[in-house]
Structure formats: C-alpha cells, structure tokens
Image (cartoon, rainbow, N blue to C red; front, side):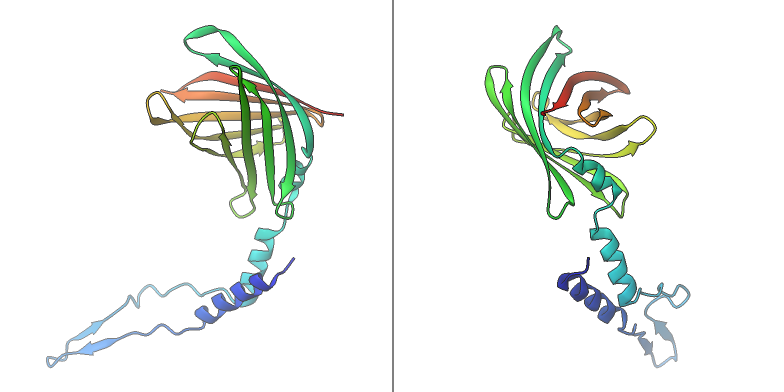
Length: 215
C-alpha cells in the first residue's frame, strides 16, 4: 500500500541522491594541492526513487508475523502467579486481558485489568514486528510503577515460543536489571507467559501467566 507520504519521502530521497558531490582543490603558491574528501573511497551509489519506494512499501506492509499477533484478538482470562526469592510461597492473582491490532494491523495492543496485592491493577502492552530488523519489540507499562519495560525477541516455530530479552528498573536498587520473557503458544485458545530475572548468568522465575481465551 502506497501513500502520499511514502511518495513524498521517496521523492525527497531521490532528489538528495541526485546532488553532485563537490571536491574542493586548494592550490597554494608552492603548487601544493590540498584535496578535501577521500577520492580513494568513493561513496556507494544512492538508491533511486523506485528502490526507496519499494523498500518503504515492504517496511509498512503487515507480514505473517503480524498475522500471528492478530490471532490473539479478543478477550482472555489470565491466572497470574508470582514468586519472590525471599518467600517460598507464591502469590496468585487474576486479570482480564483484551488484545487488538492497531494502526492498520501493524501493532498489537494489550490491556490488562485485575487485582494485585489487594489493589486494582491496570497494565498496557504493545508488540511490534519490525519487518526490516525481522524481530519483535515489546513495551509494557502498568499502574504498579512509573517505568517502562522494553524487550526484543524472536519466534521459534519448532517450539511455538516467542522469547524476549530486555531490561527493567529494579525499584529497590534503582538500577536496571536483565529480564527474559517466554510466551508459549499452546494452542489457539491457551497461552503461557513466563518471566525470569537474570543476574550473574542465573535465571529466577518470577512470574507465570496462564491465559485462556473467553468463548
């Protein structure tokens, strides 16, 4: 799908690519010549407007990865379990999640509502698939903090898992910590999400969410 913005961008790039590179020779009285630039390493040719337009069209068109995300559209019941290194007893909670694709099917938006530690819980997540980088990008915010978790990942068809790695701020130490998230697509109506804290090469499972699609 091509838009006026796409063509405008392509024309601007094409226009800039047509500009000639100017080399300046400065000749002194001693017939010394100073060459500005590096003639031994010429610049790579700039792509023409058609190539630029084709690249942007591929970048903005939803792919099979976006179709996979769209399969989550709907409402899900979520059973959440949390673990702490300081306590052997897990904490449980429930939530309702709604998924939908936004901005022409290019991004997945998730909204969670429920309770946590006796308090109302709200969370919002987005997942993108970058066609150029060929990777998933996830963001998460909720009312239990003021930061944002950002992670990137790949999908493995053999195991039906989407694995993210990224960072979040630990409010106790006020420093970033490494996290890993694994989403297992059990079937069309059931998913499992596992969250791990990563430190010194070791992983601690801090959360699990079992989600079941509402009929």
